[in-house]
Image (cartoon, rainbow, N blue to C red):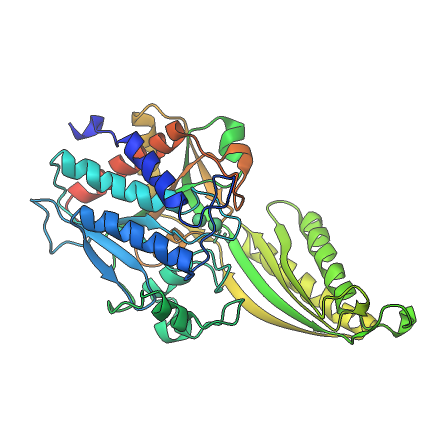
Length: 417
Ligand code: HGY
Ligand code: MN
Ligand code: MN
């Protein structure tokens, strides 16, 4: 009986642990696998092995997205896949669940169907998409953006990383410059399981989040040109201090987020000073600003407040400030019907569930451009993520993966259309 089918919790937990050993951060449960590094390559090869062991047909596209497709004995190969997946690249201080859970739970669903000889009508595809974090090569959700046709392959390959490397060269170097064309085949539907990475579900003591939207994202790089000078001899009124300007901007980002209030958030996560020495007034600062809001108009307001602040600051400090957009995605809404099925399946499994938006960006928000899409969240302990101490219990993982199993089965066993 498919309704009572359950995933193998121990097997999924074991794979999460095994993948977390790749790029493991010592003395923590976390891992560091920035996109297209050796660690990412090793993680990719491990997951590829698991896909091959499941007899999946593997497609690697020009930007390194990997999609494994599984066909049951009675699957109609002419039908579009029902797709799930996420990412296995991490931030530098990554946890073991962010992204990895969605990919490995997808494989677990396939293995559960295969060992129970259940053959859905539609093929089931599990993907991991290149550079979802955007931390090394911006924007975030890069691979899935190319997969859905939101960015050309050529422009993606020419993206320069924070270390000056070219994305296409790194893809070649790790052996994941595939030949499958981009954009990729349009799935019947896309459903992604992910940890919440925030405090909402835990605070509400709710097991499942039925995610109906993703907030807007605005990433800007600011390059501030001042003048290096002696930290001791230069009178204060003669300084053009890029370090001071960067600090002012970081403080302003916090201030404008609090002033706008509501769902507005903002942070400065990266600042590089030059020459970065104790006794030299910094001549140059390169920094990033991450602004987000569920409301597009308010996000634009935050962006224009930042621009105005930078204009005033460049005059008062007599520095030049140049800005470059690293990522800009408007808020995205998911398919009501698919969100509803996440709610219904959760309830049928006796799980508490609430509808919610996502504060983080996800590959699903790109698939929402081409097919019915939704997400399933499970709680994050203390709301922590992008931190090696990120944690979700095995029971909570189990709940989320069983919801994914049933939603995928519903989608895959019906006739399309
Ligand atoms: O930045 C994000 O929201 C995601 O972690 N890529
Ligand atoms: Mn993620
Ligand atoms: Mn992340």
